[in-house]
Image 1 (cartoon, rainbow, N blue to C red):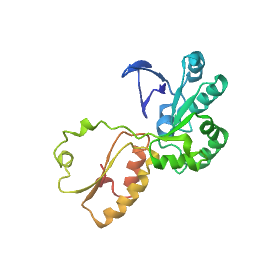
Image 2: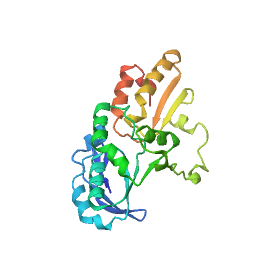
Image 3: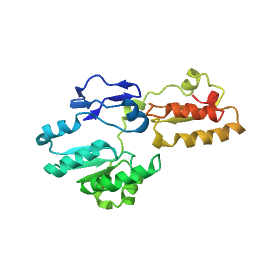
Image 4: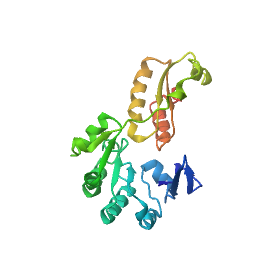
Length: 232
């Protein structure tokens, strides 16, 4: 189960399909812009689906923290005794935007969600520490690293191929590879880059990754910091 958000102004058209042998259901968000810009996912029909199919679930694997889905699944699990495991995937900390709202969510819903999960999954030892800082016993958290398909990295392009493609052969490149998500702290990277750029005009900053609600803000900030022509 997921939502149909594919971008700020894009949606996945298929609401039901098999993805690598797994039946996948997508529920329409009330607003893709809220989902993308504010990480506020409001999928219509989720609770009806959960109630209708509740007896088919032996175990629920829940992803991401502080979402409407968290509240609905916790409510379902409490009512029908369905066990669930939870993976935060970097969403536990309150340091990125709306810290007070997040603290309120934790007090009303989040702490109960973590307490009642059969198992909590961390992507790293650092994230395990985040769980522990929220009062979760260490022995309730399992560290499961992201898998990597090593075969994809056996035949890499020649060194410098991307720089040539972007016309940056003679420039020094600072590269960010990953999701353009507010919780990544990319505004801090831009501010730091601007400081470096004032001393070295040959350096450029390259962002490479899918936009998850902050590309426009980064573009605007780059303009404000007078480094827009040195950011790609």
